[in-house]
Each structure stands twice: as structure tokens, then as C-alpha cells.
Amino acid sequence: MEEPGQLKRALIDASAGAISGAISRTVTSPLDVIKIRFQVQLEPTTQWALLRRHIYGPAKYTGMLQATKDIFREEGLPGFWRGNVPALLMVMPYTAIQFTVLHKLKTLASGSSKSEDHINISPYLSYASGALAGCAATVGSYPFDLLRTILASQGEPKVYPNMRSAFVDILETRGVRGLYAGLTPTLVEIVPYAGLQFGTYDTFKRWTLAWNQHRSHYATPAEDALSSFQLFLCGLAAGTCAKAVCHPLDVVKKRFQVEGLQRDPRYGARVEQHAYRNMHDALRRILHAEGWAGLYKGIVPSIVKAAPAGAVTFVAYEFTSDWLESSLT
Image 1 (cartoon, rainbow, N blue to C red):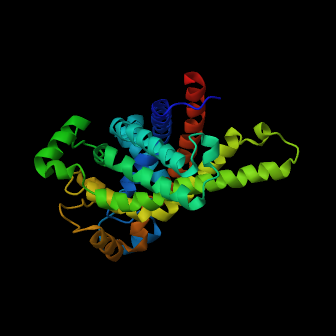
Image 2 (image 1 turned 120 degrees about the vertical axis):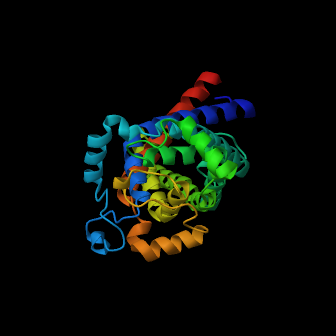
Image 3 (image 1 turned 30 degrees about the horizontal axis):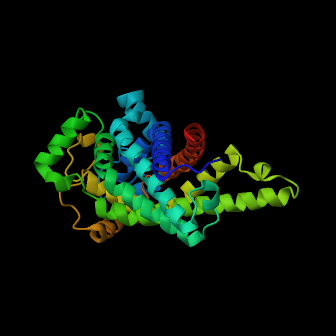
């Protein structure tokens, strides 16, 4: 197949990235809402941690099943897709930028723009390419991530009826810098997260290809190619590894994003304005007040969400990219 030109290749990567991100985000939105509710809750989120309840009052959410039931009872089915519009506005440019930059970096590293040649670059370059692509995508889409977090965490009654009112209020009360609250821990998080996600995905793909070749010595290259199920498993494993390592930094980011947000008292103590001086101070204060469990609030729905989200994103990207490449060349 003829190799597409640079502009056409960028269009393919951006379109495939945006479509795969939108599919993945919409499918996993309920788990993301539950995860955010846990992360911004100052009270303990597990039954055993309630032994420390003298620190805070009763907890609103204490388990994934209980949180699911409460959100459905109080907010209905739409509650699980609260903040999905700004999330899509975040995810689509994020994944578009991410996959475009990633493909360009891998092209420079391998000397070829063909995706099948990229799997042979060194693991170190694969991790570095993922980290740099994640940083570029984060800066380009961050305000939408902040709006998504605020809308998903506010509960009922709503503080902001829509994304526009949240955007205007943040600008009026916190200025332009308010739209980038929590950017530092996000960038610190995204370097290992994106590096691990893309690096381990490529590693698992290499291992699976080697296993396919070992299983059948007489198979043709086409028969050695990864199946959609194998791609799904590689994405599942990559998403799990990345999220398990980087979750505490995601908790810190969410706390910065909801600083000063007014919520109904039944959702528990709120994160006061300027509660944390910086990322290190936030980690120290959360650890002191809430223990290690505080840094891993929402880890179960986070991994339950991250694993299929990563799998769906990678599979959708691979198929969409192949389809667009065959259609446009």
C-alpha cells in the first residue's frame, strides 16, 4: 500500500484518535463519574477506613455498588453521564493530538511512517514518545478536563446548570489561571502515565506477536498479525498498569480542580479555596489527614474504567486508522 503523505497521515491519526477517544469516553463515563465522586470526597471511602471517622463526618460514598445505587436514585441515569459533553470536548482533541504527536515521534524514531514498523523501535523510545505525546495533548485540552471534573463532582442540586455557566464563573472568580488549576500535578502524572500506557501497550504487542510466531512456525505475516481480541487484551493490560501506578497524582489533580466548589452538605466536606499550596503539600496533607487510603480513593472504579477504556481506545484507533488509511490512499 502506498505510504500516505505527511498531511494525510496527520489527518488520519487525528481523526482516528478523536473517534476512538469519543467512543471510549462515552462507554466508560459512569465509572468516571463514580471515580471522581470518590476522589473529591474528603471523608473515608471504604468501610474499614470509617474507623477514622473522627477526622471527618459520615461519608457519602463508601463503596462502588453503594455509590452506583445512590447516584441512580438521586440523579437518575443521566447522572452517570454528567460532565460528558466537556469530557468529549476534552477527550477528542486530547486523543487527536496524542496519537498525531505519537505517530510523528515514532516516525522520527523508526525512519518510517508505516505503523507496522513502529513496533520495532526500542522500548525506551516507545515510553518516551508516549510521555511527550501525553504532555502535548494535556496542555492542549486541559480546560475541558477541569470543567468535566467540576460538573461530574457537583451532585444535586447543581451548582452549575451547564458548562458555559461553570466556565464563566471560573473566569470571574479565579481568572484564566483557574482554567488550568491542577495542571502541574496533571503533567507530572501524565509523563509516567502516558509513557507506561503506550510503552507497555507496544511491549505487550511485541510479546503477543512473538507468541503468535512461536505458536505457528509456518504462518504467513498476515496470519501472525494481532487479532482484535489480542489488541483488546494488550490495551486492557496497558491501561491497568498505567492507572495503578499513577492514581495518587490523579487524586491530587482532582482536589486542585474542585477547590472552593460549593456543594450540597450531604456530599461531605468541601475542598476549601487554597487548601493546598502545591502538589507536594497536597500529597502530604492528604496522607496525614486521610492516610494511604486517601491517595487511592476511587482506585477500584478507576482501574475498572481505565482497563476497558484503554482497550477500547487502542482497538478503535487501530481499526479506524486502518480504515481511513485504506480509504484515503
